[in-house]
Amino acid sequence: MSRLLISNGLILDPVSETVKTSSVCIEDGKIIALGDALPGFEPDKTIDATGLIISAGIVDLCARLREPGLEFKANIQSETIAAASAGITTLCCPPDTDPVIDEPAVVELIHHKTLMAAHTKVLTLGALTTGLKGQLLSEMAALQTAGCVGVSNTRRPVESTQVLKRAYAYAANYDMAVFIEPDDHWLSAGGCAHDGRVASRLGLQGIPVSAETVAISRSLMLIAETGVKAHFGRLSSAHAVRLIADAKDQGLPVTADVSAHQLFLNEMDISSFNSIYHVLPPLRSQRDMEALRRGVQDGVIDAICSDHQPHEIDAKQAPFASTEPGISSLETLLPLSLRLVREQVVPTYTALSLITSKPAAILGISAGTLREGEIADICIYDPDADWQLDTESMLSHGKNTPFEGWNFQGKNRYTIINGELVFSSDQ
Image (spheres, rainbow, N blue to C red):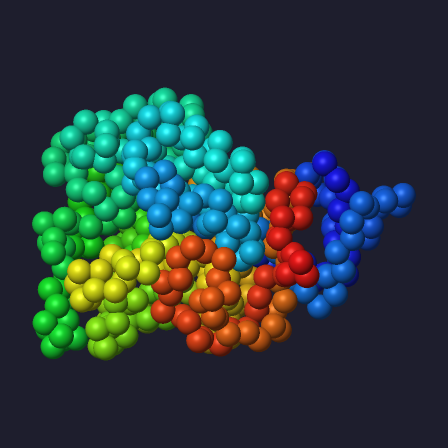
């Protein structure tokens, strides 16, 4: 472990909502001083952060790395490099890999690959049911022991409400959080766009808002009965935001997130049949997008995630409905979050908390804050950097982004993980 000094940076702490020009002393992977450099502290390396903002490393609640199983799209090595370049120090991988993360051996494989890559930290969610088939409960205790931070059935259906209730009760027994991607499979089956005027005009099969809200309502009833901690991921509608707000008012142990792209895009963006906008849940109405923004403002939505889904070029080169959904979005998580500040949706403190301290709290990990004695996972970004997204310069193997050509302000310059500099824009 080396000694690292970050000097003259502007530290923004969303937890205490304080800002100060300061230095950070790092030794043995931990922050040993915030403020003036310690007397006698001799760093092996110094980063001059003048004009830059020092933030806790970004924590991404949902990123599909495509390994194991879909390495022709991307892999842990490539995507963790991309994540590090974007200031992401920890990301969470859903269990819908191939093989599914339903046994400790798969967890160990992913952790081993992550250690070999040595770029970002990768956490895993275990499968709620064996093979994500919605029939038999997974061995949650074994998955927890192997390192899974929660369980999920992703968007795969659990047909039997009895099975779902038992799964929630089992997870609650082990104090494991359940991560829910709300979708009623029988309402959304075959759909590829929001069930509205745009989809009707284009002749695309729609996915109604009820596909999301019926699934949320069903889960909320079971959460109330079992007491399981639950996180609802990737909300897309105004009605979903209201349901989560009501659940929180009732004291249910629930949190929620939204994909960054859902805060900037809506159903009008698919009007040209451009499959780059094909995502699940679908881009919904302008009204829904505005409600999601209000949910972020009001604190109903606790976090913003990338919902990273890299694809090979062929996956998006077919008629809209036949293409694979998803956006390559690791490298736009920070700039899109900062864009919310420029558009006066939230202040900088809130924007940073939505991608650092709050997602860390949801995952139950010690991250997302800058404090003495804590692990030094740090993102240092230039708030004034003006740049344009060019897919050719993206480090992710997936170039499938609707934000190509967008102008952004704010760019990551350095990423530090466990006290080691893993990315520098100077290199």
